[in-house]
Amino acid sequence: MILGRLVWALRFSVARSRTFRGPLAVLILGVATPGFAQRVITQPSNVVSVSKGASALLVNATPIQRFSVGEPTIAEATVISPTEVLINGKGLGTTTLFIWDSPSQVKVYSVEVTADAPALQRYLRGAMPDEQITVSSSGNSVTLSGSVKDANSVARAVEIAKGSGAAVIDNLVAPAAVQVMLQVRFAEINRTALKAFSARYLLRNPQDLSGTGADYSGGVAGSDGTINFLMANPGASINAAIRYLQTKGDFRSLAEPNLMTLPGREATFLAGGRFPFPTLQTVTSGSAAGAVTITFEEFGVRLKFTPTITRSGAIRLKLEPEVSSLDFANGLVISGFSLPTILTRRASTEVEMREGQYLAIAGLLDNTSTDNVSKIPILGDIPILGQLFRSKDLQQRRTELLVLISPRLVTADDVPTPVPTGEPKTWDWLGPLKQSPAVPPTNPLQPASPAKSAQ
Image (cartoon, rainbow, N blue to C red; front, side, top):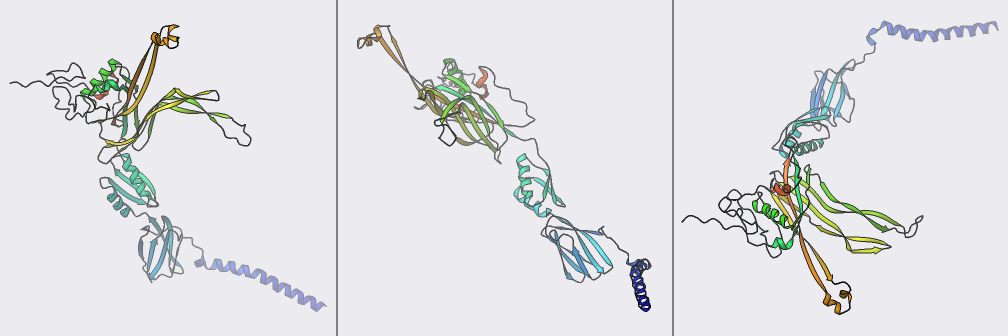
């Protein structure tokens, strides 16, 4: 028994000595061999720059034992010889490349994959040859610098650069944005008076006017009396005609908006109001049968236009003028509601004009008949014989809607245009009344004869 205890004690001492001897040996080994201490290498010794989709060849001085790429989605490396590594740019960004010359010797490279600035530069030069744009790349972004002619060119260049997949830094310089101001005049003209005037004409040469003060294509307007012209310069005769019709009460100005907007942006104008229009709801679960809701409809003088500027400097306009009014005479009465109809005169067109030209849209007619009855009280109401004591006066008024439009190019540095306020200068934007001093006309509707040449 005593022998057994001695054997157990001997085994315990041996086991305990083995337990503590192992860590002690490791500790002594770590202290005695400083050459095996840990090294953390984070700073790259060189930078390798490659464009996305391109490749770069890295030549090592000694044979390469092994390599590793930090982010394979940005760059990939392939050993093509014992001392050469081919680096392919796959995605924009920066990653790290480790190359081991030996188990204890490692080199660290920073690999930057950037956008292909030269290729983008060539593409921009081909797409926008008139612009001076310089492209540079850094990291996952490209920088556009230089000067362009307008804001549209800036937007186009940035849009093209975004196709490279890189973040775009816009350092382009453009002059003040050019805006389009549309001077519009809505007027209603008596059609009968209009027929007496030469309304269909074109001012051919405003710099060399004849003695009449204007060049008419005909003494009287066509049988339809329609105005439809495009003048290259404000003329004297249209201004005189408007003034003459105003004095006769045959010219009524409806609206005179001046609208300004950026090219490609829509501008709208409405001078009028909204009237309530009842609508009958459909029967659904939870709603009362025959319930009436009120919606509002707009009426009045409306204009909608969208301008664009062509490369040649012309102004392309998409126009939608409209004049509407309420007609209670032809309205309906539904469920006790008196509902007027809407009389609408609308036009839609797309034209190309130069700055300062004038466009007139006409031919939108309105015929109104008025039956005035005059009678002697009591006697005029007698059947049959009452016809002898009363009279009827049927008056017909035919009017034509005239829309005069003139575009202007405006920048932030321009002097503000005076607001058209007051008569009779409302329509003076058509230009000064130009007449030859030889024989001035006494009536705009009857141009004077040209001055006779000396015999």
